[in-house]
Length: 165
Image (cartoon, rainbow, N blue to C red; front, side, top):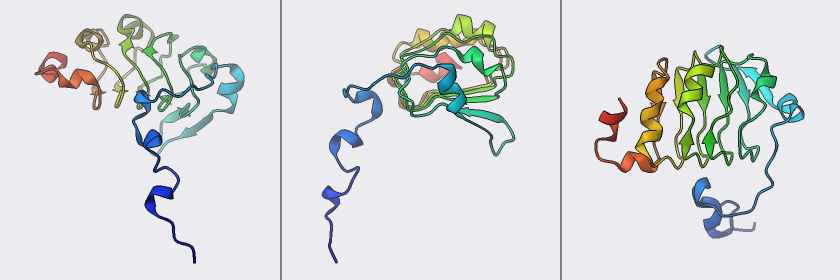
């Protein structure tokens, strides 16, 4: 029987262990086309919400979400290379955006307040949001009840929570 040391196991490479936003690898970016959306997994999640899974597609921006025809309550765009939350068409049904592990450093909260009237949860764990004004702008989105900023530089600002709330 052959034994492997832990250092020779897949996934133990220091580059792979680094957080996604700190990697400097070159990736082929995927355009969010109708073909990409057609092949994306749509399902009913355990909370009985319609969810669109756009995780791990190497997307660097959001576009063409109008092609979803407002059929989803949740859109998961985690583990991509998205830099800004912007370009949302009017999606009256959308309640939750899951955007963990991207490189998001900006949010078009003005447009989001107009185009996402039912947005209740915005989950932005492990991104690059460092400017408190990007977060305070979300006050325009009156329906947001849950905001996750764990793993963002903005959480290092003293009393950031009292400013955000």
